[in-house]
Figure 1 (cartoon, rainbow, N blue to C red):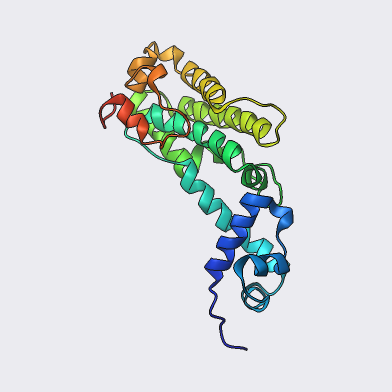
Figure 2 (cartoon, rainbow, N blue to C red):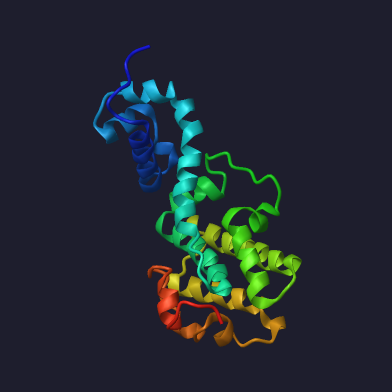
Length: 222
C-alpha cells in the first residue's frame, strides 16, 4: 500500500462540503474536488477509493455540520423549542443546497427509521425532556409539540429551499413563532411568561441564537 498522502481525509471532506453548500451536490466529482483543494486526484482516491466512497462518507460529515447549526439548547425549554424551528429556516435560507441534500433526500440517502426519531433522538429528545420539566406536561404531549413543530418547520423550510415561495426571513420567523407559541395555549400561560420576554422583542433570524437570552434579560427559565 502506498504511503499516506499529506492531505488529510478531513480536509477533503471539508472542501467537498463547501462545494455542496456553494454549488450543490451534483457539482462534486473527484476531478472538480481535486481542483477545489488544489491537488491531484491521488489523495482523494487514496482515502476514498472512488466517488462512491466519497459519497458514502459525505452524509455523516454534512449531518454533523448541520446538527451544530440546528441545536442550541438553552435553560428555557420554550426558547430551545423555537430555536430548533428557526434554525431549520436559517439553513433553508442561507444554505439551500445543504438543506435539500440532507433533509429532502437530495443525495444523502438519509431515511428516518421512524417518525418518533424527531422527538426522541439526540437533541430533539433533550428538548422534549426540557418541556416536560418546565411546563409540567406529559412526555406524550411534549413529544407531540416537538414533532409538530419539526414537521411544520421542515415543510416551510422546504418551500423556501426550493424557491417555491419567496418570503423574507422576518416573515418566516413570525410564521414559525406564531405556530410554535400556539402549541402552548392550553397551558394558559401568556407567551411573555413562556418566553421570558415579549415575542416582539425576539431578535432577527440572522442573530446568534444566544441573542434570545439577551432579549430575555437573564439566563434562567421562568
